[in-house]
Image (tube, rainbow, N blue to C red; front, side, top):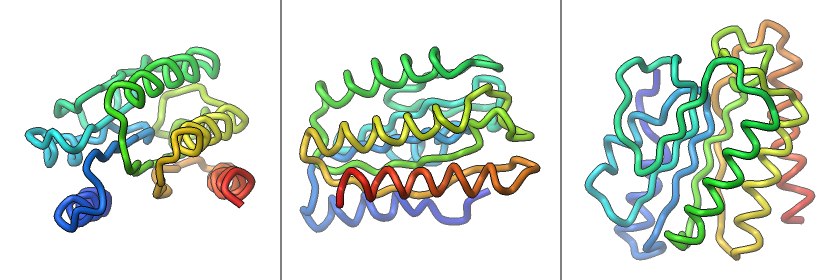
Length: 172
């Protein structure tokens, strides 16, 4: 669906201009970060982390540095535990000096394509966790809104607003 991979362009810019050495791309959209995985498959300076629906588009998955495939209907507790355990380990092992975060809200239980069972509250906890991890490790973060196909538009808007509120509260 994307004509340009903005995170890949920005990551390459940072690397080329020596503004970062170790970049972590955290893709938490319900769809695998296949474009990013393919673009950086041979680049040791960019670690791609994708936590996505196993049975969701794209049906042919690329290979990220770490892919966490989620079963349909996964609940809040399982989702957050997988995220916290895996992303913390990635941070410790790879010591990024810049993070790009795709914070898709198509993980919500109300999303018509997502197939996951994640609440609005857990989506906010997810964002807070990612932001706090970056803040605690003194790593700059850039986030981009992504995904959101709930029939009730207010679910999408509230989830995206929660992301911004969490960032403002932590980084203000």
